[in-house]
Image 1 (cartoon, helix red, strand yellow):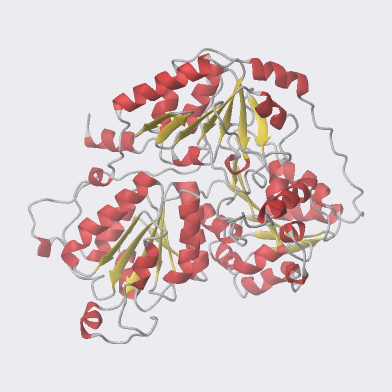
Image 2: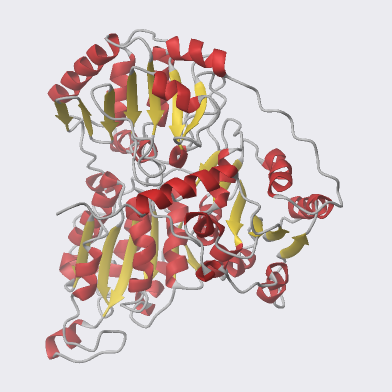
Length: 611
């Protein structure tokens, strides 16, 4: 087997494509790009001084070799030479963002579409802002590589006080912070050490599916260093321990043989483990019902005959909670249970009837198996189980088809339900829906996704405003997909500037902005005057962003007829984004948000435990 073959195998399932089709159906992956590894190596036999490589060009080569076609950046004086060096790499494009928070979230969105991402920011005033988004990448299991410029090495030695710092002689505070929110954090203060440190950071990020941090002193970006070795050195994915894998499969098969009505529960870490295809294989072998947690919507095909909907406690899809509660064995695959996903700790499978398979471990009542990769475990287990379809028989009894929704009168005041009725036909196999924290989560859960469609939310980090820059980065990473953003007015105000970058790159993103005059999700958790916001002319804002050369469209819909016309304009606009401001009543939200908010508020309001 060639080096190229080994590299392809090593990352075969680390990308973020939708799962392959189930046996007996057409296998089709949506055109979300995966990491394409460049296995070209540099010439050997040259000294460090005559390779032509610098610290900056080495970093650029490695980022391109792991498949990145773009990197995101905000300029700052500590990074300018580094940005020049990265521009020399013609295999990557430099994409500019409005601020560092948006830069980080743009990279996070790109990683969802493309498999990994990189962002370049300046020291302290830039990086500390980007750390917010980097924390999100950590929480959401996305390998974002944040590169920060840093002070000149001579200033460190001379104990100089510098701008963009805390005004102390200690410049290590930034990397110390980074170590808390990354799987690897390195500081390059010697050019000779750059290759080893860069490789370590990138290798760890890809292996752990977590962000990494690289700090480059500003006077070293153009300093000469060694040429890159084979890219395969970065791809050291740890294999499953054979004995532990075999023991885990035997124990899991025994667990399932003792169950008459098991159910599979898909969680958000399934994608990070690269195990979507293998989850389908296990589902096909078992024949049981498959429920998906809210943060994992689209990680299991919704047109699969065993898919029974979203499991989210009392706001689950019709019949889904009943099946999970009725089951005598819940197999959790990459599940992540927090207060949001369990609706205030009211829906959390536990006890001896639960088997949990995480990306690198399997555990069940009284038994633990480490160093077991999830996709290896699922693929092997699929060949060892017997069919258990009792939950599908029961679900067929409970299942009810949703009633068709009639269109509202075109002149009637726009409602949330009418808005979603018109959004549904836009979601095709080539669509990615990016739903902002808030009622957009619950609206999005009602969408029936065709095979190949993707759905993205940020439920663990839950940063309002995430969706706009994330959609920008996602669209850069997956230019062939239709990107639909659903965002509330309050969230939009945090990161609105990145719409200007969509206009700059002529990205035909469709933004449905729900203007209900406030933070509706917070209102349903705990209301107060702090949930009110200053209204904007959101549709009119696009004209500001367009300036003299942009082609974005800003439209306002007060009724169903205006929304229908706005959607037609959006579908015809291929030269930039279209923002459709949907004006609805403040209290027009899903019943699910109300129920969820009540239970989360109850969990938040628990009194202190007795000491």
